[in-house]
Picture 1 (cartoon, rainbow, N blue to C red):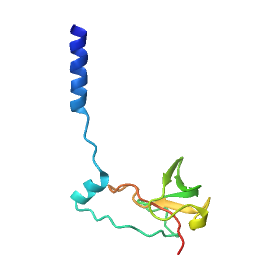
Picture 2: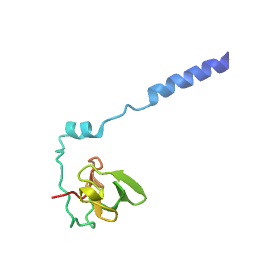
Picture 3: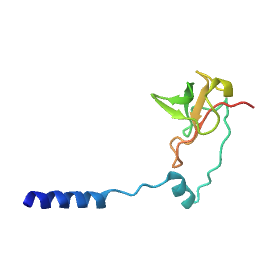
Length: 106
């Protein structure tokens, strides 16, 4: 009996301790941060603190060891991208959510 009470108390306290998920975009809007779509710049300066560069890998942008889906543009060859083309995250080291920019037709 005692064991059951401990388990029930444990599970009840875990439910109260779990944080509520927060949508990053909603948090930025509430904070008054402007969320504007940026355009892909093929000459982006990768040495800037807020730019984290990678290369197109299939239909995604590979930054480091992780593939991220493109938020703007496309890494697909028929859409102006293609394996090895440059892509980047322009919100790196900022409070804004990740924003991956990939090549596109102009």
